[in-house]
Length: 311
Image 1 (cartoon, rainbow, N blue to C red):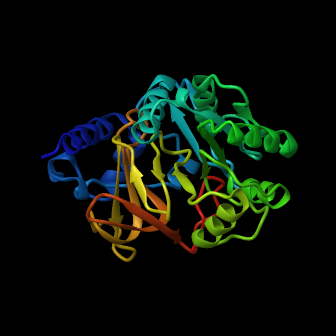
Image 2 (spheres, one colour; image 1 turned 90 degrees about the vertical axis):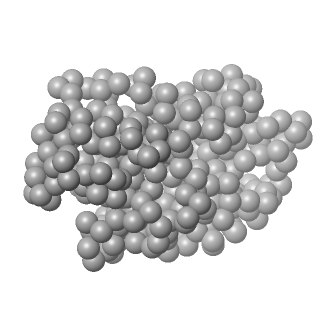
Image 3 (cartoon, helix red, strand yellow; image 1 turned 90 degrees about the horizontal axis):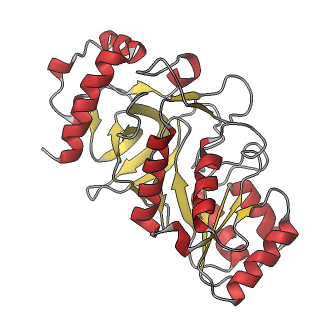
């Protein structure tokens, strides 16, 4: 048994005992800790429960992260420890990209900045602070200032990361087409009703052309998770060490496998005090080497601000 699986099984027992909502869900599924011997036997709570229930093993929250959505009821993630979230995204970022201080980090996240308690904004604020570089910061609608910053950094061949929501990146590179050097463009997904949804390949082709870069990186995260996965191109994601993605059968949700195509189930070991076992509304494919792709969303699911492009 791997260290990840052992920790996940221990966390399942803990959350079964200490989360009333999760225990009730497991009871409805007729599953108890004595029934669970492997990851695929763990019950995964539907992500929609974060809209309707307070999911927590603790009585007190340090912060409540809230999803953007497009109206109606939003998801709320009750986080008992901000330090746990900071450790998770810092270790995840460093695992794939190294020290944030090695980059000039710029963020283009309109929509997220305009509302309180967005987990993505909190993560970017921390990374920008750790970057401690000229031009690093948030650019709300300041396209001219962002263009000047990217141009200056590119000319100086400074390692740069621009992370942005998809519609804003498209708006920017249509108005300010540019050819960049030593720059990572990372999309977080989400048209938020501002533009027509695009398949990932089309989105990335437009961004590659508009920014003059050979590939587009992607971040996969959501309000209900404290860990992230990253893609360095072609929409193939690798999960952070604290995270694993599994596949559930779309017709038999209790049937879970490590590879194949179906609904994406996420194990997030950083969700120690809420729920580490989430059945998302994303459709995807998991490969034998642990990587995964996001292929779309269930037809009945609502549009999520943090969602990736639908196929």
